[in-house]
Image 1: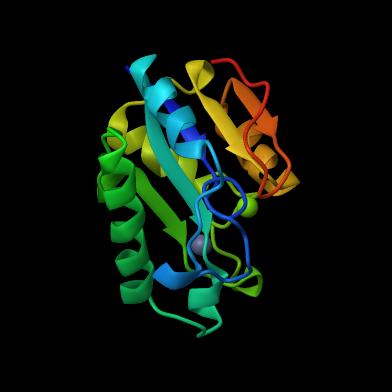
Image 2 (image 1 turned 90 degrees about the vertical axis):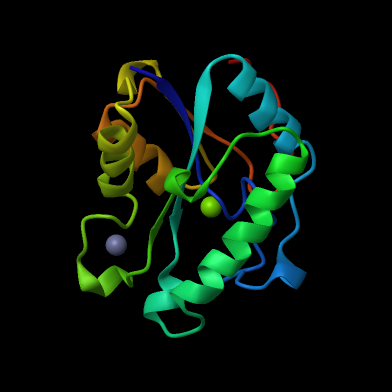
Length: 158
Ligand SMILES: [Mg+2]
Ligand SMILES: [Zn+2]
C-alpha cells in the first residue's frame, strides 16, 4: 500500500481566482511545486481532488478542465513530479445535485484509495477550506492541514 498526498487544487496548487478554467488564469502558488516534489521523494503519491462545479453550472466543460489539467501536469513534470491524469479526481456537480463526490463528501478520496490501494491512515490532505478537511476526515485520512488560500504552504513537514 502507498501513502498519498491529497491536494485540493484552487487556492492550494493555483491561485483561486474563482472558476479557473483557462491556462491564462492558472497561476501556481509560489513554492507548491517544490513542496509536491519533496513529498513525492518521501514516498507520497500526489493526488489532486478538486470540486469543479463550474462544469455543472455551464461555465466551462470537461474538455476545458482536462486541457487545463494537461498544462498543470506538464509544468509539474518539468519540476520532476511524476503525475498523470489517473491522479486527478474532480467533481463536476453543483451542490444541489447531491452527488457523493463533491467535498465535503469523501467520494473522490475513496475512488483514489481504490485506484491506487492507498493507506489512508498514513496519508495527508492539504486544503484551504473546511470542506477539504471534512472530506479527508470522512475518508479516514490520517493527517489534514488547513492552509491559507493562495499562500505558500508553510510549516508543514511531511
Ligand atoms: Mg480550494
Ligand atoms: Zn460530484
